[in-house]
Length: 66
Image (cartoon, rainbow, N blue to C red; front, side, top):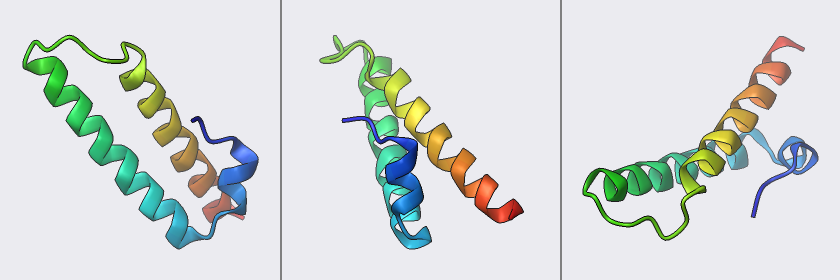
């Protein structure tokens, strides 16, 4: 399930950091499975994870600049 920008903005900084860590761990797992030549269970998973990570980082950067 993709997070919407509004949902990310409602999270506290701690919750965002935790979610970012989870997404990065999941991305590492998906990339490892792809590197081993296994057929991906969800071909779009890597792109979706990267997009969500970027969305969280963008919102964090926006809030730093305020």
